[in-house]
Amino acid sequence: MGLSVDQFFERLAVTGLSVADDVRKLLASLPDQSLPSNGEELARVLVERNVLTEFQTLAILDPHGQRLGLGQYVLLDKIGQGGMGAVFKAVHRHMRREVALKVLHADLAESPDSLQRFQREMRAGGRLNHPHIVPTLDADQIGDTMFLVMEYVPGSNLALLVGQHGPLPIEQALRYVAHAAEGLAHAHDQGVIHRDIKPSNLLCDEHGNVRVLDLGLARFAADGQAQQTQLTGTGVLLGTVDYMAPEQALSTRQADARSDIYSLGCTLAYLLTGQPPFCGESVLKRLMAHRDTPVPSLSEKRQDVPDTVNRIFQKMVAKQPAERYQSMRELLADLAPLVGSRPPRSRWMTRGVLAIVAASVLIAGVMFDRQRGVRESKPSDGPITIAQPAVPPSLAIAPFDGPQAEAHQAAWAKHLKQPVETTNGIGMKLRLIPPGEFQQGASEPEIEAFSKLEGRSMATDGPQHRVRLTQPFYIGVSEVTQAEYQAVIGGNPSKFSPTGEFAAQVGGSETTQHPVENVTWFDAIEFCNALSLREKLTPCYERSDDDVTIVAGTGYRLPTEAEWEFACRAGTESPWSFGEQDAPFE
Image 1 (tube, rainbow, N blue to C red):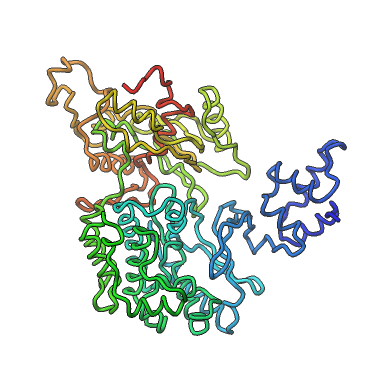
Image 2 (cartoon, rainbow, N blue to C red):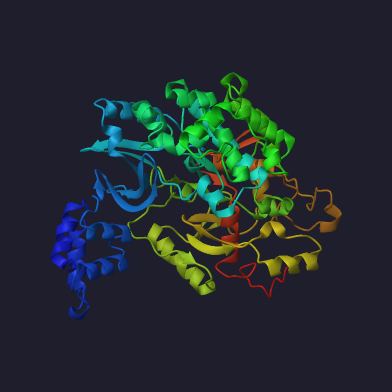
């Protein structure tokens, strides 16, 4: 027998959700013929009207369903399950901030001092602040349920990434390992050892940056149950044997920074070959292999792995800690020549100087901040503040035409209480781009046609894949002009200007509104930072010589490839917003 509507309300009352009044108002607004006759029909209506998520209704319909409210947090969806507990997407009741909430297994709270130890480790994790670490925002215990709250970062962990797409290209794998090493170097500086580095604890976000998960939590679990879980399979260590240093298998208290380096080396092997370096039919055999089996050669498992990369791997996973890299920074020094010290550049930064500045700049200060809910920026014509009401408009799902694009912009501008178009202190016009989803990259026929017409390859633009942008942003309406660049930097590097190398070709014409060119990638970074400071915003880049790091600033930055392509296409499936026939790959 199904659940009645009254029984649905009874179960709703014990979940911790505060939506009963909203449900009653919705029912009162429905015509009699549309009223649900049982709890299942009511659940379906509530999902369709975005009152509850499907996960929440399933929990209510399940007689053994879990509680959906934990203190100030409401569970929205289940997004993962691991050896230490389940991970949920959740939202703060009052701040409306989305977070990732990890509910720990009950057996982690069995010892009398577990809560004290848990809070101590979470305080240690709370000290960490680095672009390549997912920060811990909160930790608490309600009844017998312990949980921690982390920043919610859309993306995929590296275990899933390799599982879905196979071993990674060498440069990409090395870059991901370098990202993790940078975050771990910061953690080690703060005295925090992870002890559970593995592909599933490394998250690749929507911008291609890898961030370390669960810092501090692994040490808490290891201290609490190392002895009973190494071989029994009841806790976290069983799931991480494939990446565990030999000395850590003997005693988790012996693990130090070099143990994390060993685990990261095993992770590198997985990224490049699709499997960890040591195999065995049982946990015990794999533990023994880490201790006794010679370190395999990555070059033998994958022929395109250079000797340099194999030597780095061999040193990372040396049996004796004294023979490994002694710090993450020592490892990073050897990785730097292979991955470069700067963030990966999009294809719009590799087609020449005009494409660099044609990307224009984007106000990071009007994008959602996952830690604080909103960011604010204050260009000279008044403050721009994007706040997030509870129910945003729908995403702009491509394909859509010009009028539909304008409708999406208008809806989001109204929702955010911001203008569709604004102007900053140097006269640069910026336009609001709503969140959306589109097909990124060129199709195989387009790539082939472009190659034949232009005589050059377009292979870096494929294969096509679906991309979702989850946050609104402002982007420059046109290229950065020579006048705008000079106003910020104090000079004009353009060759096609009255003082440039090709001055004769411009014939003395006015070029101040022409796009600035002959600009390097570092020049573009300097322009973004200088403009940020001019507008009294925090720069988004830190630079030391050729070392550039993206930081969580409130100023201007270069758009990602996905942001740039989505804005240019304006929802069409053609190469540019003005249509394929008007611009046939010319």
